[in-house]
Image (cartoon, rainbow, N blue to C red; front, side, top):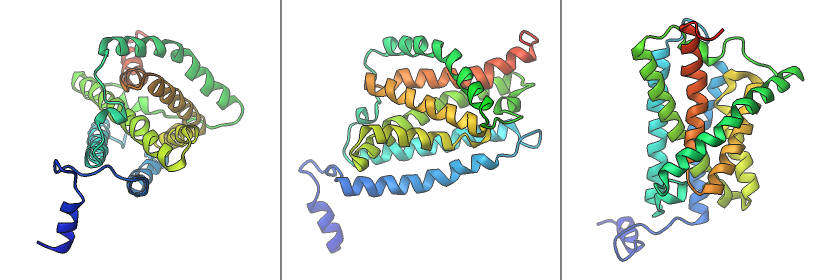
Length: 247
């Protein structure tokens, strides 16, 4: 056995588990994670819009990417000897949290479009072809795939941007306010295709979701809000327009 391996064994807890990571190790872990995720998110500014972009390819790529990042985050948490509850993964009062998420989403139906419209009027940009255009003219398979995509995105991104990033950023900055603000900004980077007005609106939503998560100490309500927001814009509204039920 090598000396490095012997030191690794000697540093473990009596039950064989790894000891919790210190602040320096968590900061290094956070730096590695941000190095992996931010360049890919910045590419959203250069997303090709229109018919040349296949919705099926986009959806499958999004699902696989988010599942990969979710797996990485959960590995970090497990490796550090932390409970998954540390990043908001709790099943307590599940139905109550789901109901709360639905109730909190209702005012956001009006607040978010009004905010984006106001930002657009003061000079911020909005895209001429939003992401929902990619999901128009869908059949049943595409509707099911889109629904699966928004579900995976909601679970994965809430775990990543609210549960994990706020935990690590608060440790790194020693400030919960900074952790909330930075996580919301990083969250908005993945929505560059929505223009500056859309990104600012997404950042505001990120702050709201962070508040809900920290209030409940549970990701379920935030996941429900995120899912309903994406489902209504990417699946429901285009489908209603396709069926001529909405002008």
